[in-house]
Structures are given as structure tokens and as C-alpha cells.
Length: 301
Image 1 (cartoon, rainbow, N blue to C red):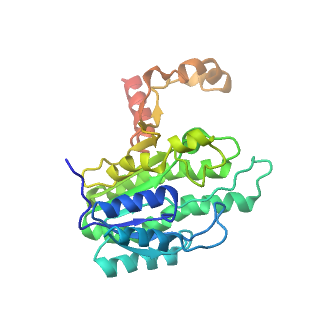
Image 2: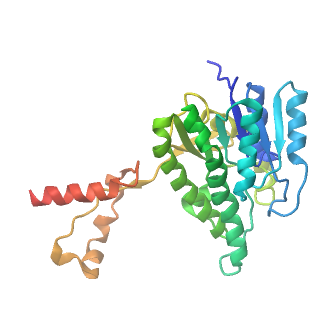
Image 3: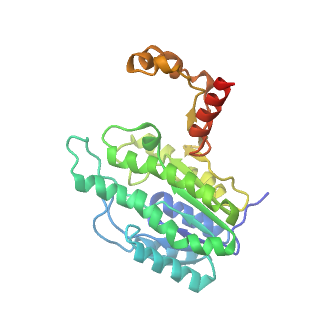
């Protein structure tokens, strides 16, 4: 079965290089009209370039349809202008891939507050701004596919990346909430944790790994997650041809008697509280309180 994006309008942020470029090229090759967004800054977010224009030229040379946008995802008014431009030109917005990002890696002891704020503003706030700019259009269409870019650094932490990891786990909470709020409007929202050899990782990966983890190996997962038959509320890991799903889990837990609800009582029960044997996926933020209420109700009866 061939998956087509004909008659779809897609926006890809950070699409001047690496993963974003690969997404934009494949979306266009499969029939989508693509807004190639890229501020053109360096890896740490400084400077500007015509990277988006270069990708648009590639798409047009291959017979596709695309336009460039140099808007800054961390500026909501610029994201609004980008969305308005796409809608005016092509009549709607069906797909948004939030891919723009920067790195300012340092240990937390050496990290300046400005570096923490800059990274979270581009990754987390920038994703929220770009998504907010297209949200009403997708609700009106009763159709939308949104992908946010999380990371294994967010899911598990990573030395020297407190700013990046904080933003990336925050994006999981954003995506899961939007998947709930968008469901009745036909909007599906997912998260991808890519591992790819790009300018973001060129001095992290050894040369052989850099080649093995090509951006093209992430594309199948990303495009499936914004396709018509995409699931919603999932986290997918992709890299080097390996594809995985990740879940947030919580176990059955322990209902402590009132007399044991002390620091000492908690400590004594810790092995049972931390037992992973009964872990199940958390699907929404209400489940913890609902589960606790159910345990209390069962205990009383």
C-alpha cells in the first residue's frame, strides 16, 4: 500500500538541514505542498542563512511544490505569519512537523541561565508557538497531524544536556495533552525520538555511527506518524533502521495504612512501592488520581 500526501499542506520547522530537510523532501516527493521553515541559524541558534531556500529549490527541481519561510519558532507572531502564508497560498494546513532545535550543551554547574532559557524556548516554547499557529485551522478542517520531536535525552536524561532534556520531556507532556484535546477534531499528535547523524550530532557520533544513523532512516517513522492512518498519543524511537515505541508507566503501588504514612513507613515499604512487576502504561494525567481513588474505595469495602 502506497502512502500518499497528495492534496496535503505540510509545514516542517528546522527544515533547512538534517532531519527537517529529509522530511520535507520526502513529503514533497509524495505529493505534499511543503512550507520549508528554517531561520538558518547555526547549531547554537546564532546567525542566519538561506538554508530554507536551498531546500525549496531542491523540491522544485524534482517537480514538487514548496515555499520557504525564515520565521523564528520562538516568536509567535512569526509563526502566525507562516501559518497565514501557507493557508492563503494553498487553502489549509494538514501537517506540522516540529523539528527546529538548537544545542547549548554544558554541565549544569557551568550552564548560564540564558543558555537554559534559549534551548527550552526554541524546543518547547517554539513547538507550542508553531502548533498554536496552526491549531485553529486544523480544528476547522476537522483534520490535522502534528509531530513533536522529543529525545532519549528527555526520556532518560543525558550528561551535559539539562536544558535540552528538560525541553524534550516537556514536549512529551505537550504532545499527550494535545492528542487528548485534538481527538474530537480529527487531530492526531505524536512524538518522535530520533537518532540521526546531523549537524546537531556530528561531533558526538564517531564517523562510522554518523553514517549509519542517516537522517533518511528516521523518515519512514516520522512520515507514518503524520499520515492519514497515523495513530495518536504515541512516542516512537527511530534511528539506524531500528524503530521502537516508548511508554510512560506507573505500577500498582501500595496503599499504606494510616499509621504507616510516615517517612519511616514509606521507607519500610519502598521495595514494594518501587516494584516494576505491575507497571502499566499511563495514558492520561487523570489516571494516577483515579487509581488512588479506586484503591481507597476497595480498601473501604
